[in-house]
Amino acid sequence: MKLTMRHWLGGVAAFASLATQAQANMVAEPLQYTVDGRTFEGVLIYDDTVLGERPGLVVAPNWMGINEQTITKAKKVAGEDYVVLLADVYGSDIRPTDAEQAAAAAGPLREDRALLRARMEAALAALRENSKRAPLDTSQLAAVGFCFGGTAVLELARAGADIAAAVVFHGNLNTPQPAQPGDIKASVLVLNGADDPVVPPEEVQAFEQEMRNAKVDWQLNNYGNTVHSFTNPNANRPGRAEYNPVVAQRAYTAMRDFLSESFEN
Image (cartoon, rainbow, N blue to C red; front, side, top):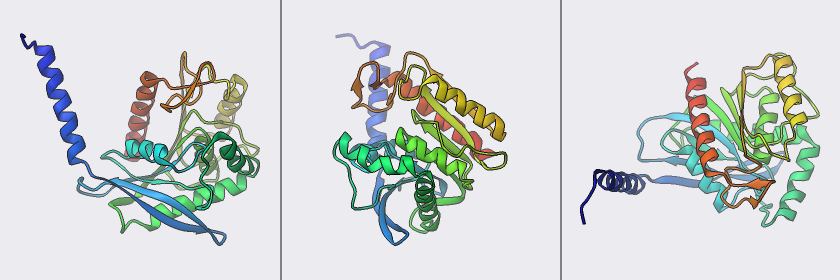
């Protein structure tokens, strides 16, 4: 069989990908911290084959909280470029295993945004305080959230957290306490499915007006033909929550470009 240039290049790319995976050593170790006397346990993630300090990200998972899938996603976000703390917003004794349990865990935090903000602020503080455990540059911090985690990240930004950027993947944008001028220090990027029934147009419009009124440096990417949970490979509810690998890759690229720009400023 004749080996074409296309086949040869494809083989080289596949080999390079395997070699990179073999060389990478993603550390993922538990990190405990407390909020009001209660124990929380996040996961500290970074590639320890990369030399030198790098920016830190608090990553807020979807409403399922910390599990194997959300740890895998956090590793993808971390890559070679970031130290990540996968945040625990429920407490170390709460690990939902289905949607019903997740709704029960997330519900009180949706209702009590002050509590949600406090837990996200505690995760950010825990990341900053553990710079000796990981190659972390504490002068460059940001937050990234998915679905319910996106809501959590926006509340962290609205609380005035000292972070360079807040990135939201298919998260709810509403809040009972809209930001006022000067509240938000971070640049904000929202990555949204244009056809997401969970985040209706009225909610998007209200968020845009909130950002304008608060004089925030913000961007919103609306991805066409895309619904909720588009980065989640397990999302399979057509018309409501559905994985879209092409849009997911576009959104991850947008996140990395946005973070790079935010950390340069």
